Image (tube, rainbow, N blue to C red):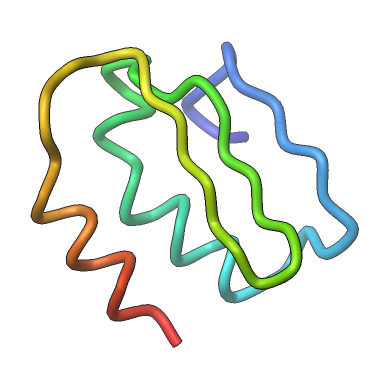
Length: 66
């Protein structure tokens, strides 16, 4: 993952537009090292963060992804 050396990605679709969109939306959280885990399985997205802060704007952006 460019510019985020403390993270790694395991995926069967590395060029996925969905993955690219998710990573772009969450970029600031990666920079702050708030992301613990992201899992996308059976059309369900789960994001675990290392912060108690709410990120409603990011949640709204994620909900807009189609």
